[in-house]
Length: 381
Image (cartoon, rainbow, N blue to C red; front, side):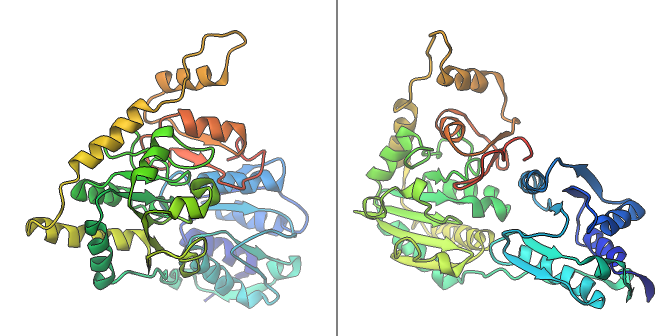
């Protein structure tokens, strides 16, 4: 095996794990890592003005395409992550980096923090990059029996809806979502983090639901439904409002990769722990079997009614007053920009107005901080 600094091994692991882009701020305690990045030469770097901005850059980059891994580099200090570790033994550096990528990708994806003390970075270790391989990712998968039961419940309803969360986008399963919706004829309501999973112009797009980041037609469609199948969503309070009102008069089915999310907000009538892509593949397979046997309901009337609400229950935006109203600005943006435009926004009024008035046609073209993102997120992201 080759002998090298632990920090050089760490950069080789980053490269082997598929990292192409980093964002950060050099500092005394992390400069050896920067020297290793320069020596390696295969990982690009964007210099931020402070580490918080670098973390926002990394998150924004991660959300733009499947497989993107945004890396934030800062000098020694705290952070909020899915997993955090301080490496105290130089020989452990490659294994800790390997485990960090495993934790980051497994289950619900999330950020991890590795703290590398200066002496650990500079120590020499044995490492063979040619035989290094990432650990297999753990993702729970629904069973066919579970999907059969969920489809039984969906078929027993008259006015079902699919709620598509950010987990559908994270799983790169938006094409499967649209296939399933078209196969069953069930309209789709994306959450704020799932916006773009089905295009706004798609006839089965039933609008967004919630207190602020919502469409009037979407709220009306939810209230008219008798069953909601949530996939890859968390029932965040901006989407549900009062859980009692949201769930009243309708059955709730919930599919999510994280078992602790099932029943966290309210107990569903049926819950399935599964990666969204794995679940949707099974949903499509079982729905196709039933369609071939003539056992799927015709949902065209219900879908048409949902679409009519979306197209007629509109917010006013054609103001011509001076000073100009924000509604007019968003109207001009919709008319000027095409479907390939990516919108990036943080929280607050910009998020609310954007969600109410913009049009998003593709996944990963709505890059948003989410429910509790910090102000100042937009520009670096």
